[in-house]
Amino acid sequence: MARPVLKWAGGKRRLRFEIDKLLPPDHAGRNYHEPFFGGGALFFHLEPRGGSINDVNERLIRFYKVVRELPQELIEEVNRYEYGKERYYELRTRFNEGELEPVEEAAIFLYLNKTGYNGLYRVNSKNKFNVPFGRYKKPAIVHPGRIIRASELFRRFEIYCERFTYIKEVAEEGDLVYLDPPYLPKSDTADFTAYSKLGFGFDDHLMLRDLCLELDEKGVYFIQSNSFVEPIMDAYRGTEFKIHTVEASRAINRVISDRGRIPEVLITNIPNV
Image 1 (tube, rainbow, N blue to C red):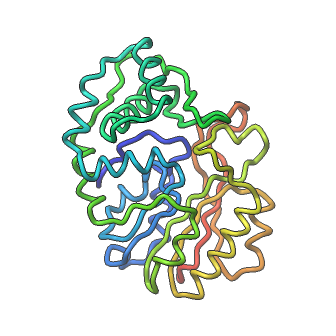
Image 2 (image 1 turned 90 degrees about the vertical axis):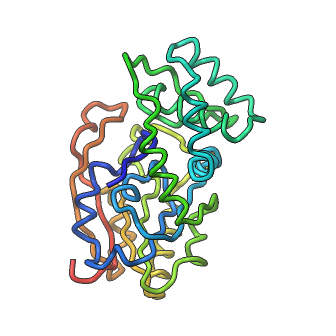
């Protein structure tokens, strides 16, 4: 089992064993697609044979393409950066100035991810990364083995930076799709971060519901994770999809009472689960 290269808020590392229970027994032999990739916790857990990954975060996707094509160069570049608050803000400023070579941009991306507060990726209205320094004692910034393994896995996959609807063109009958959209917030306090300059509102969730219907009609298996909130439940009640309630650990929320183990849903068209 591989490990993710990045820390990622909202990642499914703690939920992956619940998702395991829903997978078809022969999932290892199916092509796999993940339109909302983020940190890719399930992807690295499953180590699928081939397919596609996608995210609308352009910097994230450029990072993964460097991991795929130039893993050793990435490792060497990150190892040049010493850990410290002053260095963090220097690199954050350089990152936001843009016009960087791919390996340098990817190396700074990884450094900021491992040394910034809670591993958040958050941008402001000008699309500038604005996460503060994380104040770790001795953060492990580079895991060479993880980067090399990720490079090997990514070489099996097409990597896209598109809207999630791209999946209609690439997923074929019998494929498996994992959908992990930005959750519909339980409240306005739960929407703690912005992964890209593009938002993801309730209309997008309805579009995703319609996409699930299209995938089902095409014979594509899917599993979607989402928040356990009434609008999501209402959106899927009229379908024949199975809705499973699970508990997941959430450490990030401005409201302390909304941290810890909270209910979420897994929605799927996979039979006999």
